[in-house]
Amino acid sequence: MNDDLKRFSLTQTDAVQWLQGLPNESVDLIVTDPPYESLEKHRAVGTTTRLKHSKSSSNDWFRIFPNGRFPELFRQVYRVLRKNSHFYLFCDHETFFVVKPMAEAAGFRFWKPLVWDKQLIGMGYHYRSRHEFVLFFEKGRRRLADLGVPDVLSYRRVVNGYPTEKPLSLLNVLVAQSSIPGELVADPFCGSGTTLAAAVSQGRRAMGGDIAVSAIERSLDRLNGLDAARCAEKELLIAC
Image (cartoon, one colour):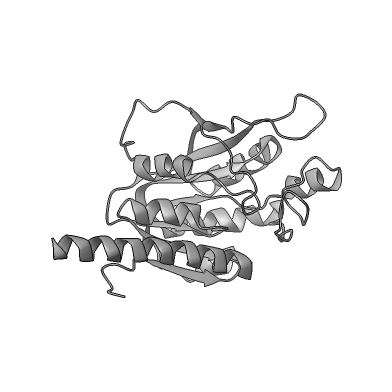
């Protein structure tokens, strides 16, 4: 495949180790969704069925990223991001209060939590959840592409997908808001590759890492499919 068409790379490794291998100020945007500690608590008490082998999911439970490792993660994220860039972190209400001060200590400016309205109610016992937070951080100053986008983003959650998979339509908004074509978008917990797919489909370059082999395989299939479609489209345009 031509280099101008293949615009992504994937690495199977620990998130922090992967970031440590990237040069200083080499990335334009990071959007990621770590498998935070509180997910394990939800699984243990039976308030989620999407994170293990079950009728709702054919995927294995993945390794948790401990809260105690977030400071080193944020230090590396801050180091590899260029000046005047954004960082989006998906998390729940418990992780929000743990990680926000850690990210600020690493140097980030915290703007606000975005709310992802999943449109479908989840499991639970007390006021069952249908939302998730996306923490919006900034390094330096960067203007959003569209100042009219609200802080509540309503996109139906993915059903029967990869564990905690996010809808492509949601990631398309974040990528479009905080990057331009040709820039590099990275995700150190790439999962099924939704962030990378949003980046590639909008003309950005993409890099992803994940400790799970299944995640890399899923992302590779997805991104190769996008590149194959772009190849076919380019050949059709040349033929015309």
